[in-house]
Image: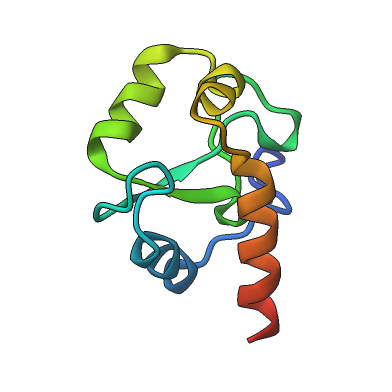
Amino acid sequence: MVNKEWAGKVRDQRYLEHVRAQGCLVCSRPAQAHHLTHAEGLRGMRRTGDQWAVPLCKEHHDHLHAHGNESRWWALQGLDGIEWAKGMFEWYQSN
């Protein structure tokens, strides 16, 4: 039986390695893969699919989680994590 919460969510460790290799979107330092919690219309701490992963260094990853409002945090950085994730996943699938 498939868990409805996970149905349709991409899981791809090679893609997550690729995301981490890009460097932090804010400062370009070595990155972790952060799953955008405001993608797919989700709110809170529910994990999205790997297609919604973006690279953030530990400092910015921790700062984002401490901030609490992910959409607002990205706006304050002047970045659009959702657009980055869409573009990177499309590129990854075509290569």
